[in-house]
Image (cartoon, rainbow, N blue to C red; front, side):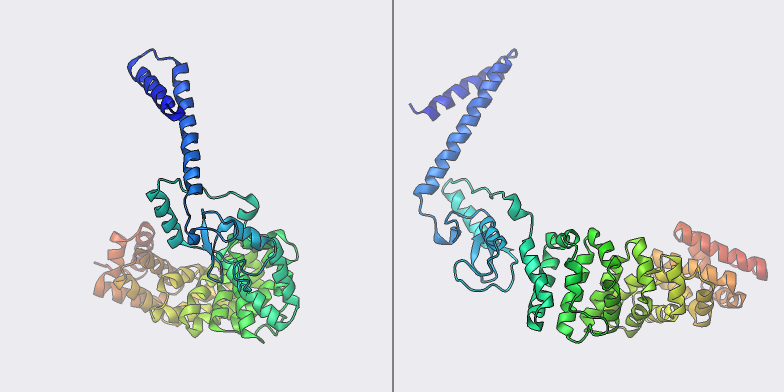
Length: 435
């Protein structure tokens, strides 16, 4: 009788004792658990022997370890490796494929789900336990710091080296959060990254500019990089310049980076003082779909501080925003910005002059968005408080469609207050009874 059979019989007796006897001792339970652990170890050893004695298909073996893969990934050359082994190879500074010796174009590792499924099926059919992924803290810490250093060194090298490194950095900072984090840990990383984009000449090489500006946007997503980028004397000026000049994607990503950086209140002031609002407003005005939303988001965020509200109004934001709303473009986002700007008397005056009242009333009457109706009622309330000459337009709308009365009864709590406030204001001022 084998050891495993003896253990199973002993476990069977113990389990019966545990289930039948109410006063079963703790020692009996402990012994049952001990036997279970031993049986588990025997099972694992047995499955390992099966793997050793079974011919493993070549496509399931890692070319480096020659063992069955636990986490198969595809290298840039199309070859599949077990992640811990190929990552260690890359971290050692190698930039070639171990199997083909080809120079790799990038170091991104893509999971090979097909091979993973094939290995799982193969193991299941043979009763073999799936190989457990190897844990290597150094490997799983992320991308290789040495590789980052080598890419940044290329930023002060030849133009071809700069372009190659910029393209790789763009890919790495997009797909690998750990790579973004490295920049906050390395004091000279951001200055080296920005080195090729000299002030006033950023758009000399559009492809290089696009990749580096997009890299800055990717970096700005990481919280620890936001202040570092904003405090660098060149980063924000280069972003502002890139909002003005460059490919559509460059301008859009520069605006997105300014939006991302402006989530910190201290950065809002820095960005506002840099002259960013005028080019952002121009970008919104020009109307390219790819860039407009990023520009609108950045303008909204920046206008959350008083100084930037004033700047935005001076730079013509009200007229551009109203025109877009009237054209049914980004209505939700731009109405929210218009609400913020309505705290400025000059902005309210401009709204009245540029035909905001009929536009706002139309949205309040026809929109299905409760938030938009609420924002329109808030803006209209401010206009009516400051400009009685607009009251007849509101009265006419109310007589024709009862727009304010309906909103005062069925709108959000804020919309109800604002609509009722407008009605009350005009009742007192003109002694008109609305239905």
